[in-house]
Length: 160
Image 1 (tube, rainbow, N blue to C red):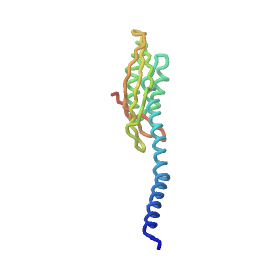
Image 2: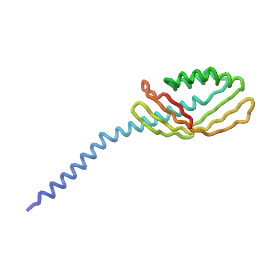
Image 3: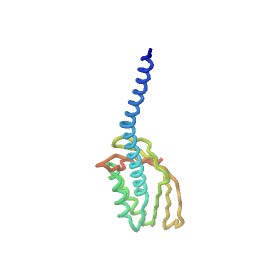
Image 4: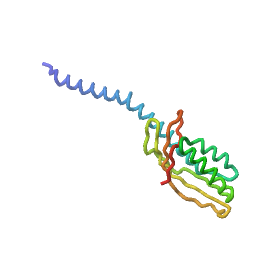
């Protein structure tokens, strides 16, 4: 005589595992891939923005500042515009300050559908008329981004 209970139990377990596997493959896995793509886009936007905000030369200030503003939105855009016009541009021109910034590493701290926070580690090299030898410093910033019309733009930029 055939024992149907063990066969039915085995079929139920195998079926349940199959269902869970299908749910993972068709629901979780694509969402995870989308999140990975969004994270990479946020990291790239934060890195590009940090480099643009903190790199300038007296010979190309207008172009440098316009490039930096293209990475900003909201209150930080207004603040940056005022800061560069009233303080940075006159000082950079007068003292012939050249600032080059490179991103060493960056990682997502928070990721949501339309916002992200990225930790960015930077290496900055500064030269000026008074100090012609390059001075290199390291720093880190916490960059908050918001998705605007499909693009990640900086809404907050905090030095740590």
